[in-house]
Image (cartoon, rainbow, N blue to C red; front, top):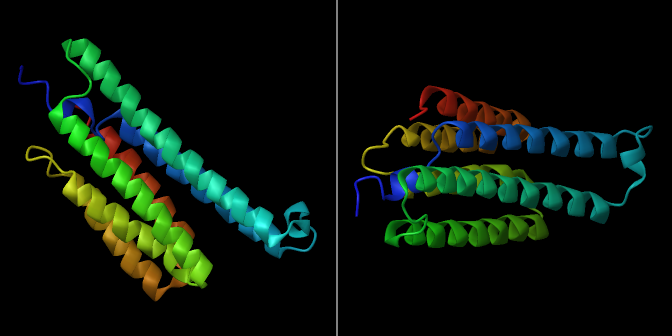
Length: 187
């Protein structure tokens, strides 16, 4: 196998994939903020919706965000594997895919459990902590600067625990961090 057929090339947050993920996080945070704000305002049409519909809308936005982010990573990996003429899935990428699927399932399970138990102030901090841990475990030896996003995520989670209304700003900063990382680390 060639030097290029490894996890770093096939699935990575470098370049345009990180920018796309950052944009998806920004759009999701904006849409969720507008839905929740509209629900609280009497003159807004979203104020007429039931709580269950608002919950379904927010969960749908989150699922679409994860789906589009996953697609951005996959298409970047497919493009890189075609360029180097390698298989997209090798032992390392299969292991990373398994970790990613476990992360998605456990994250959604924990977040929905927090919502059902009434701990809505801890949903964003829990997501940010889990996301930071996920990035920490998926770092590659030569890509230690992904730890910056992991550290920013955990620090934003701590800030969200102290100031629960800071969730929107934290997700906005996470999106900007991804965009900045994608611009700075292109190759």
